[in-house]
Length: 214
Image 1 (cartoon, rainbow, N blue to C red):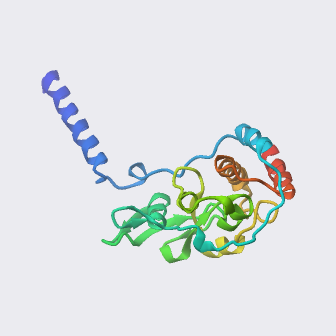
Image 2 (tube, helix red, strand yellow; image 1 turned 135 degrees about the horizontal axis):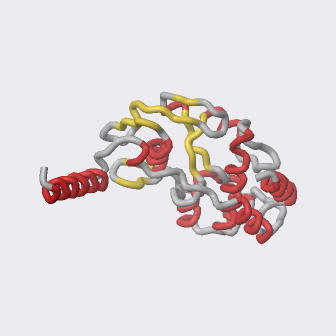
């Protein structure tokens, strides 16, 4: 084949591939959004040093004050969007519910093949956010926090592990996989810093300890 036609053919193939990818037709990890990567340990240490240290108060907290799992695109809400983002070979129906796929939980290293076995964790729990400043926010800001796909705040994890975490901070609970500790605390500090949330003294000490080992 003459070089001109070969180059032209390659150009057409490349253009078609880009078009298909932009239309969302390709499957697999390369076609799905990646979990937001937390800031570096050095940046997290800087952020942590600037956070206000304060005692926490849960007066007036109600989970419903954080509207969550809002519609993100089409029929997909935030939970379904994270399931598609964090899963492998995820297939969804017309309502965007995941009908098959697999999900690896970075908290405990377990892999699940049923979406019902997976929770979407708020890395900084809603109650913890309320305790450390979100009680004074507007409803729209609490909604943005509860559905934040830009910061490393939402991730798919084993449901009973998420339930055991509850609303605990890193002084009270950490993932059983020690290999994930550095990622977890970097993400925690980034989210608290971005939203201007405070830390209590035990929480700050724990974060400093974990970040020192990153």
